[in-house]
Length: 189
Image (cartoon, one colour):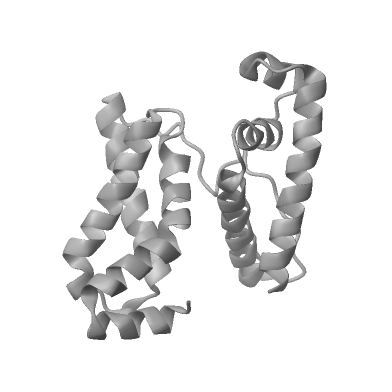
């Protein structure tokens, strides 16, 4: 569903609009919250934070102005702000030891463009990649994350997940094929 179609729904039926926003953007909101809270919060806290993001949007959706910016960026901003606040509340300090799109731990993705456009496309591609990574079943998503984001060896991943090194490598290979297929469809479509 296109963003303009969603915005049109807002004037017709706010409840259907809100449901459509959740369906359309829950993946990216979860991705943003997960990046900020993965190392400092339990799964339940992450899910509660995602709910808080949508609740905050629901309360402010009458004030959302499509001419001021895209709905996706608006939701990402809400998600980031709430996740940072939750991180601070859970840790009682202001260190930001979470993964962000600008982190050195995030692998570079080559692009055919130049300058600012290239940087924007890299960031968008990283968001898409991270969202697709979150869709992988456990422990496959964890294995890919540890291998390419945390740069752990197969032996380290095996120890952390309780799998054999051979199982880690097989799951990694299958997961990479799934990611490649998913990304090919998204980036080409």
